Length: 248
Ligand code: 13P
Image 1 (cartoon, rainbow, N blue to C red):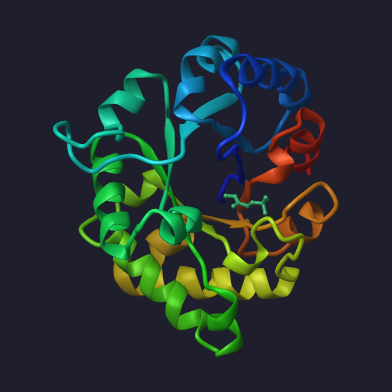
Image 2: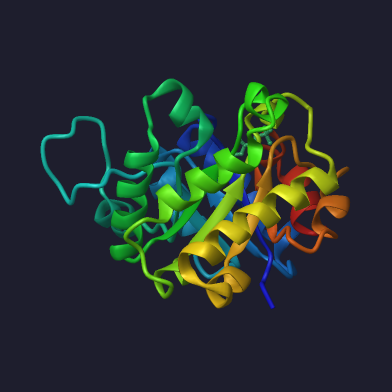
C-alpha cells in the first residue's frame, strides 16, 4: 500500500531564525505521524533547519531545482547543491513558478529528470486553472502536464517521484476541490501514468492533493482512495496547524 506523504510548502516565508523555531516547535507535534513528513523551506533556511530536524521523522525539501549540473545560471541551485545542503525532496513545477517565473512543461520535465537522476525525490505539481476547469479541460490538462513532466524517466525512477495535484483556483483562496473532485482528478492522473509506465507503476506512485488543505478538511480528502497525501501552503506556516494536517 502507498504510505501517505504530507509536505509543507513554506513558499517565500520564514527567515532562518523563524524557520529553525518553527521546525523545533513541529518536532514533538508530529513525532508519531503515520505518514512521511516533509518541510520545503526557502533555500536560505536549510542550514538553520537541517541540524534541528536531524534524527527526527521530518525531512527537508526545496522548492525548485535547476536542471544543469552547474554553470552560468545566476540565482539557481543544482540538485547536487540541494543534496549537499541536506534536502531529500524538491518541489518542481509549482503553479506559482509556472505563473510568475515562466516555468513550462518542458522545463518541469528537465528539472524532474535532473532531480531524480541526482538522487532527490521530486514532488511534481500539476493542476488546472479555473477557466480550464470551467471549460471542461481538467482531465486533458492534468494528463498532459503529468506525461510531459515524467518524460524520459523509467518506471523505476517513479519510486522517487510524488505527484501533487494542485488545482490553481484552490491555492491560497480558501476554495478546496471537493473530496470527490480531488479524488476523481487524481484518478485521471493515475490513469495517465498507467498509460505511460504501466499499471504497476501507477498503482505505486503517491499522488497528493494541494490547495487550501487544512486541519478541517484533511480527513475527508485523505479518506478518498486515490489521495495519498497533501501539499500544504498556508497551514504549514504554524506548527499546530501543520500538525493537525499531518496527524489526520
Ligand atoms: P495553500 O495551502 O496556501 O492553498 O497552498 C497550497 C500550495 O500551493 C502548496 O504548494
